[in-house]
Structure formats: structure tokens, C-alpha cells
Length: 115
Ligand code: SF4
Image (cartoon, rainbow, N blue to C red; front, top):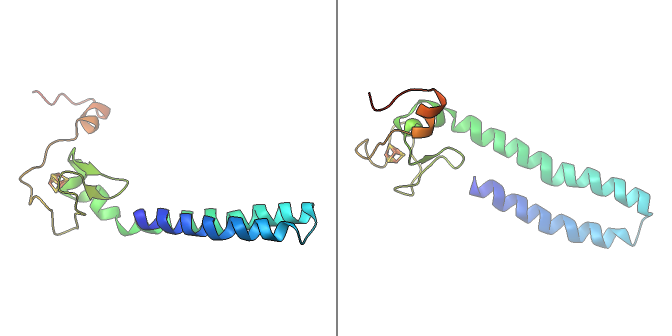
């Protein structure tokens, strides 16, 4: 996830000055439309594509590992926050010893975890 944010920031830093320089060479209306299209094409669209790829590549880890039901698991980064490591389908950083139920999961399913 951090890589997606990093490359999005790099593209923003490259595109904005380019558009700023281009502004003095073409008509404003053309520049405005070109800016909108390039912001979508260079920044927004690649970010969406990379995010979807990230989700697709990590779908099994997010949905079907022990970590996916643990309160220390950050789905958005596919990260164990307790060990600051990325779990995989076969390797859990804690090897299951520090697993704790995700209470929000139980609340959303209206399950009583005390019984
Ligand atoms: S504590 Fe263990 S089970 Fe929980 S997210 Fe980290 S590695 Fe996974």
C-alpha cells in the first residue's frame, strides 16, 4: 500500500509543475481540459488500477487467514500491527500465538463473545 501512495505522490510532483509550465503556452480552456484529463489519466486511474491489483493479490490473506479475524490485523495495509510484519498465506509472524478476536467483527455479526 505504501508503494501505491509513494508512486501517486511522485506522479503528482511530476504532473503539477508540468501543467503549470504548459499553462503559459496554450489557451486556458485547452489547458483546463488537458489538466483534467491528465490528472485522471496520470494520477487517479493508475492509482485505482494499482489498488485493485493490491487487493486482488492479497485477497486470500485478507479473507481466509487467521490474521483476517485478529484485532492486530490492518486490512488496508495487509499488516500485523503487533509485529509490524506482513503475514502471508503460509507464514504468520506470531505463528498463531498472539491471535486475539477482532471485536468489531463480532459486534457487526451481533455475536456475544462472552458466552
Ligand atoms: S498477532 Fe498473529 S494472528 Fe494477529 S495479525 Fe499478528 S500475526 Fe496475525
